[in-house]
Length: 228
Image (tube, rainbow, N blue to C red; front, side, top):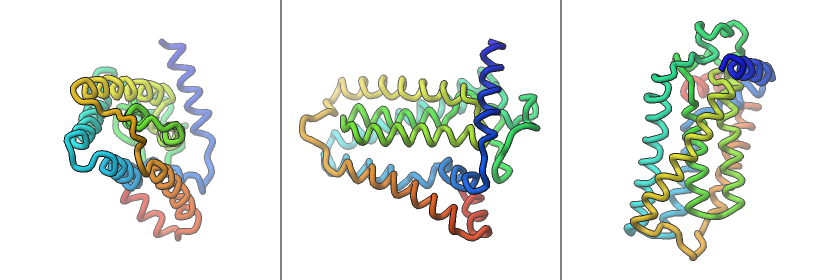
């Protein structure tokens, strides 16, 4: 375990050192949860278009909600309080003086596993199982990787935290999907409509944040970062 922890620490310091003033702002925005709400709405819209306001739609919504509660609770409350691994920014980590942070953001006390990684990979896995549309799966898992990497860049998670969350999220998603699909067939041979809209929304958010980080005034950018 000591060797694994040392490797994890060295890997974190290497990745965390890859910084640039412009990317500090962009990655900070990427890491925010609320900026991705339009993509979540696009996913919901695709489900409504497919099922209408029928039983399957409400089961799908319940499936996503239950999976989110389980991933967020297991990461944020259960496992973290059991393992109690300090975040890199925590003084108890022993490397806090070496960590590059952004906007003085340091996160909480403990960081194993990463809730960002668990939640994002859970969402990507559930959408893959439900929609069965390869282009969407490719973009959603790419988003999950970017979203998770942002936590290393910001200095609040080790790669091991990300890996653990990235494994836990899909496992919970797979179990919840099988449970819900057992009592009501959520998969259909009829292709889902407007799935490309989810991809376009994701791309638009990433590009929009890139443009905002590049051209927004320092005061406006600082305000946005504080709000998110």
